[in-house]
Length: 182
Picture 1 (cartoon, one colour):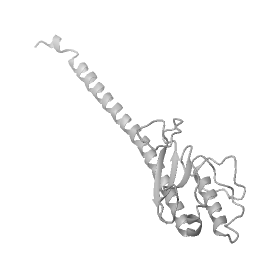
Picture 2 (cartoon, helix red, strand yellow):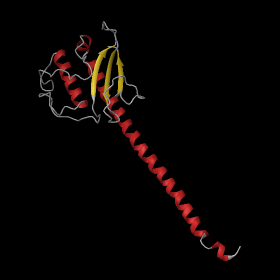
Picture 3 (cartoon, one colour):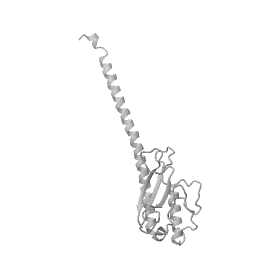
Picture 4 (cartoon, helix red, strand yellow):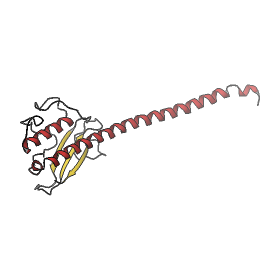
């Protein structure tokens, strides 16, 4: 081949290699972004698991109030404000249940409106639009009935409100459930 036909071939090879490198770097950037998003969702699930386990320990410690149904509350409703500060005074099982629920709820839900005046400020969980519920699985709740501790949150921050906990549905909140038999 003559020299005049080969002029510029090296430049084309460099351009092709640069384009291949650019596409590869875009792929790596996409993987990094996806990894960061998945890591944040895993962090949220870890937070929810820790908070649910914390409430389970409170239910175990205050079995009298658990069996009386004093820890039960529905999603979207803030627990009743405690009448007493149980961190500074002796409390009955009912007062302790109200105290435990208020502290737990304030660690999960947005309590910027300060519904609990007796609760000291504490750590906040990183759960967007967090909500809680503690329910009895049976209609006629008994000592042998399963209690479900559920934490809901809007993992993808898309305004989800559903409570079916379906990870495939964009309209459902993410949730973590923990079952307990007293």
